[in-house]
Length: 311
Image 1 (cartoon, rainbow, N blue to C red):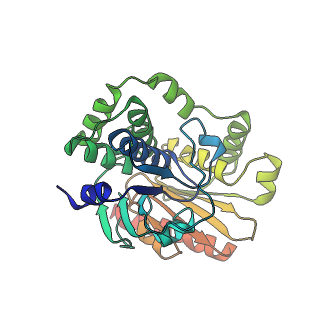
Image 2 (image 1 turned 90 degrees about the vertical axis):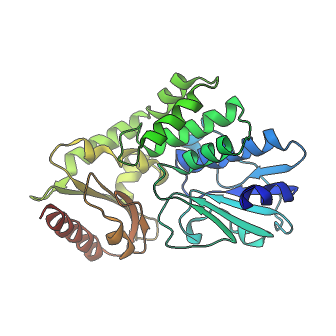
């Protein structure tokens, strides 16, 4: 029996975390694991904690535990590369910490780690953990995990999608849930997001190398009535333009620094993200910038990176 399953069996109370500013994989892996454990171990108390992101409420909701420590509890963190991004600091007060993640293991936190950067998503990892070790899935758990896989693969478009990913998704799709309705929800957005997407296309700066950037200022977010978390809906938009190979979206935060979302079609960019208080996958990373000068540096580094990649 694998050590992770042994630990799950050993604890009566388990709390599951994921990263701040959740995406479908963060929620899908967290809630999918919660439902799997509840289904297979009905006598245990299993909770999922963190901020409820309104734009993703259709996927599922968090549990709200009282303001107490998690002393004596098993804590599991899914889809979170580093401790700074873990939502709810009470993870530190648990008895034993397990990390389940598919990002590069640059921050090897936890007492036990299951990290697989070749997996498309944490949801894929958790689905296969259940399948491989005889844990039963409910229809609800399958829905959570399917949403997570679809979210992190860009509906099976991104290079991280493997034959194993498709096989896992097919097994989940065999369960009974409204797959078409879920996909419709994931593919829809409010009119204000559509208008912001128009702003992005109108204001993209595209270099001769094929690198693009756009800045979403606090003034723009206010004008379009967009929250910081909602700007994630337009991150993939520049990639639909054939001439663009790498891009960065600089989102100004309330304190004046910029959250930088970087994407690339082929040239790895995560090493650039690491230079700017960030990290992530080779083709999908995040960073932080603290001035317009640093914004310019990141843009130039992406340009140089693409030139080197093409040589």
